[in-house]
Image 1 (cartoon, helix red, strand yellow):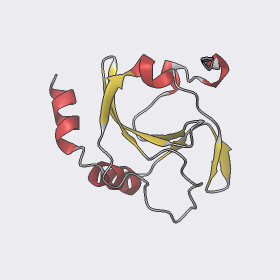
Image 2: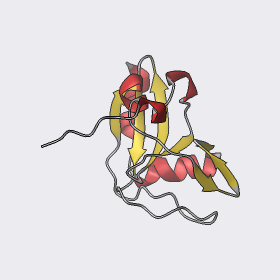
Image 3: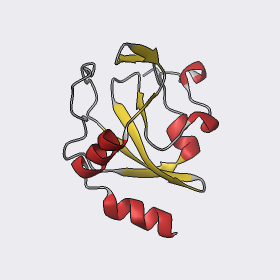
Length: 118
């Protein structure tokens, strides 16, 4: 069985990752960064194979468990640009309401508090 090689050109730079940013993997999974401290972050993952978000879409993280990982591990997935609110980019900044919605949808408050308390 042939192993798929990762395309490093599609990886993020660690310096590009910020709290409140929304990313889209090549597996069509949305990821929203909810908190960062040191070398770790908490993010909300959507299901894979998601359709494009429309400007009035709710955040796509309903009942998704949050994930904690190293920032480098998060960056070394393959990401693609996506169009949202008529802007095509590798990442999109969520407003405070959207970020709060993502945190609520995946019940991330306790995980964020635990990370920030470390």
